[in-house]
Image (cartoon, rainbow, N blue to C red; front, top):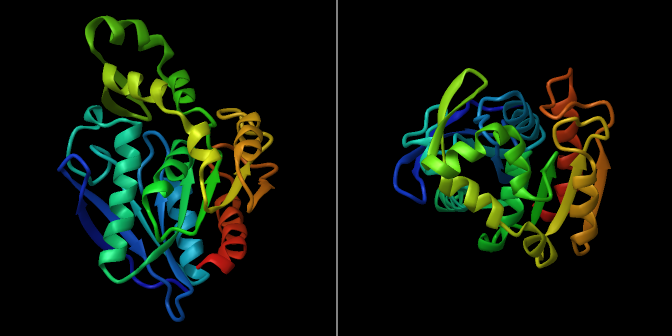
Length: 253
């Protein structure tokens, strides 16, 4: 069973307040964790909501939050970057720790999967990291806006329409993701790592999972989410992923 979700805010790494939800277990608590959503998705997208609620139902309370300028969070999305996303994930972990709910687990979906791998290095209490459909290279996200790159490089920014949202994409974001070295973060990660990916993912190909897994140290695990799409929108896809994470993470909570 799941308790009543708690609405919270905490300061981002750049100042504006970020809004989140803590999905608490109802009954015995096995542990706590933080979830990082995909590129422009938000805390209420199906993958974030369903994974966190399923984990809470299995005794692992989770904080999911909107990144800068998305959903209920303050600030301008265009001021963010991959580095900001990583730093704000660290802030989310610190919020949980300061509230007496020590976070031991990081879970990230898509772009957020890359972010949690990088963020874990700055979170001493985190013992386990699970990535779902994550790119090996954060710059993979450039495929979402490749038609705008020349304009952004020339003008410094350009309007970016995605999923009905009007956002501003700025040059510093492009430069930041191109400079991100996830390989080094993976190779030096001293946390248990679970890599989850669907072989039918047409957005972030499964070759990305192979690269992450090969670069990682033990303890490392890989689980195929066969039949799932990238956004885990199919019936029970996100819940299934959460049940696997729950069982895998048990020794580390």
